[in-house]
Image: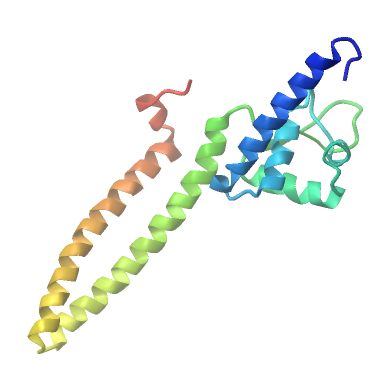
Amino acid sequence: MENSNSNEWKKLVNARNRFISEMSKNMDLYGINQTIGRLYGTVFFADSPITLDEMSEQLGMSKTSMSTGIRALSEAKMVERVWQKGVRKDLYQTEEDWYKSFSAVFVNRWREGVDSNHSELKNLREVLLDLKETSSDNLLLKEVENDLERLQSAEKYYEWLGEVIMLFESGEIYKIVPKK
């Protein structure tokens, strides 16, 4: 921190810390805990690519924790490893394309959720169709018919969500809603 205008520097640091704190609270949307969210904020505000040692020093956490956190952020496409001539340690910086991070995390989650729910929907339909063919209980058969109708709505929704996912995976979404 600069000595001249130290109150101004403190103001900047405090504002950054508030932003990092708020952002890290919401990282659970990405499947990332608050600690790793603070790590992301540290890398985000670094003036240049940063090493695990520097991250560890700034956050007061172990290098092992930093390594685990950076791996999670890398998998979420939120940070990337970069190379600099003459530097032997791994350097990291934030991914500049936040849209890529969003797509990498949310689209994968949506795809997993849709696939899982769609699979269970098919299993339920098989059971219902089997009951429809084998049961003679009229009350049960009425419930089976009601459930089959409900499944049609659910299946249409999952098909629609699959199309939304494909818009993100293909990048077509940015033709509809351009990146800012």
